[in-house]
Length: 132
Image (cartoon, rainbow, N blue to C red; front, side, top):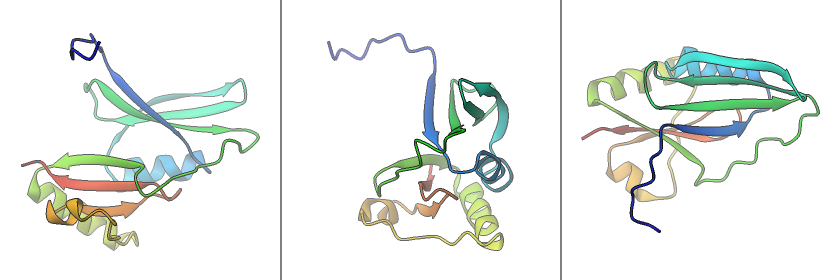
């Protein structure tokens, strides 16, 4: 155990959202990820996959017809995107133009690293961090 040799073929991070359409618009139109697919009416769940085409990972946004589970973020539920510095600055400016204002994360690591932190529509934290 713990030898780092697990043959992982891909990674999916799933999180519940309050409004699937709003979350999808945020991650596609504001963040700039690609809508890779999704599903509807699967035992009461609807979902959407966003990410980078051809990558071995994606973010799954889910919503159940009952509204449960509802988003339950903490200050450490971070989605960190590593970007080239020019892309980070361009994307951060776009967030601000669209009314999404950066926040200061309580862990000084992120500001020391030159990262910019935003909240998504459900309150989860999105960190844009320099790739270097």
